[in-house]
Structure formats: structure tokens, C-alpha cells
Amino acid sequence: MLGAEWEVLEAARLAETDDRELSRRGDSILGALRQARADYRAKQARMILGLPAPGEQETLTLSQWRYGGSGHRYGEPFWAELARQRIATTRRIAREREQPDPG
Image (cartoon, rainbow, N blue to C red; front, side, top):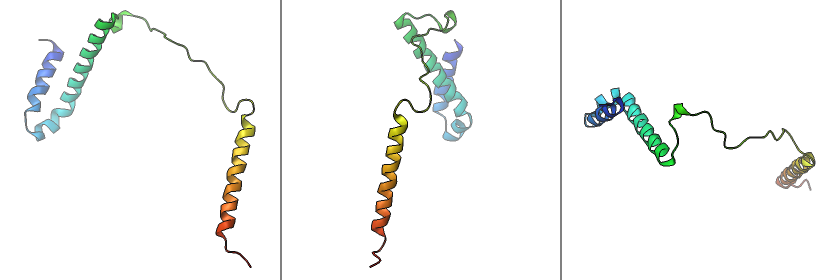
């Protein structure tokens, strides 16, 4: 049997044991089961899509990222300052309404 198939059978056997034994060894076995399942699904997907095995190809670039700069762009500092002023004004008005009338 192949290694991955043996791990799957071992994981199935452990799944039928009591919880204490499973909790002790289960993490590594279930991790191996998940990895075997993921490898199998990846192999299936590669076969369906006609893609080569992972080690048989170079990195494929499907698109490129472009640096868009950092910070504000044209006009954005104005709008940021306007928003800050409006928030400050709204908070000031709310504080004034909460204070008792001196008269």
C-alpha cells in the first residue's frame, strides 16, 4: 500500500477507538488524514484541468501587482480635513447640548 493510503486506514482505525487514545495520537493522525485528502483533491484537480504536477513547472504569473503609492492622492487631504472638522463640530455641539443651561 502507498503511504497516504496507510495513513488513511490508520486514521479510520483510530476514529473507532475511545476518545482518550484519540486525543493523544489523534492530532497527528488527523493532520495526516487531512493532508492526504488535500493531496488527493489537488491531484484530481490537476488531472481535470490538465495541469502538470507541482514539481514539473515553473511559477506561473497570471497577473501583476502595481504599486499605487502611499498616503493621500490629489485632493484627498482636503476631504480628510473636512471630515475631521465635521466630526469635531458634531462632538462639540453634542457636548454643549449635554451641559446644563447656566441661566
